[in-house]
Structures are given as structure tokens and as C-alpha cells.
Length: 140
Image (cartoon, rainbow, N blue to C red):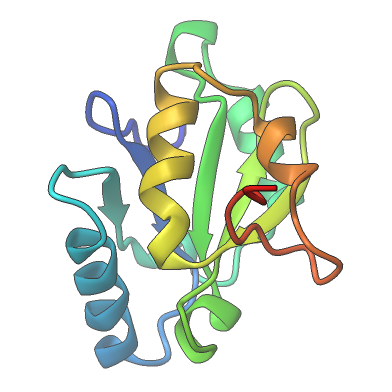
């Protein structure tokens, strides 16, 4: 079964951790409040509980080409439990399986630029800090 399709000009945010409904609500509120425009298509389906990047890549590779998506964001245990709700960004196209974390406050910038193909996944992944987290571009 192909992955859910995000709404136009948004990115798929796929919930994989179902341990705390309050954390999921807080994440969605953080994503909605980060910018005036919607950037996330949030999907909470129990079939994705605990799914890993490799399984998602296999599922997406099996989808018809016109149904494939090029990136997504996972709301996993780290997203739910860590300050700033750092989503796991996953490349499904250029470098399948490459990941970086992006706190909710930076999500609109990343999602918007990836959705319109203004920037590549690698542009953000390469700018991640030593912990693998994107915290914006240095202005210097």
C-alpha cells in the first residue's frame, strides 16, 4: 500500500509513536503555530506504529511512480519526548534513507523549500549540526 499523499505544498508527517496522545497534540499545535500557512499533512494511522526508515523506503519503492513521494517526516519517540519536537526528516528519492532531525520551529522552512523543490534534501542535511539536527542556516 503506498504511503499517504500529502496535501498540495505540504509535507507528510507520519506518526510512528503512539505512546502519548498529548505529545501528538502538542506536536501538531507546534507545527500549526510555527507559520501562518499549513506545511504539514499529519497522518496518525496505527499501521505505522514503530515502522522504521527501511520499511518505509521499501513501501515507497513498491508504489507506482506517480504515487511516490520524495521526502517525509516521522513523528517518532524522539519527536514526542524531546524538547522542540525534533521530527525525523527522511529522503526517499535522491539519497534514500538519508535522515536528519528538524525541530518543529524550523519545519515550515524545510517543508516549504522541499515542497516547491527550491532546495534539495541534501541542502538541509548537510547543514545539520553534529547531533544530526537542522537548526537553520548560519547567517555568517
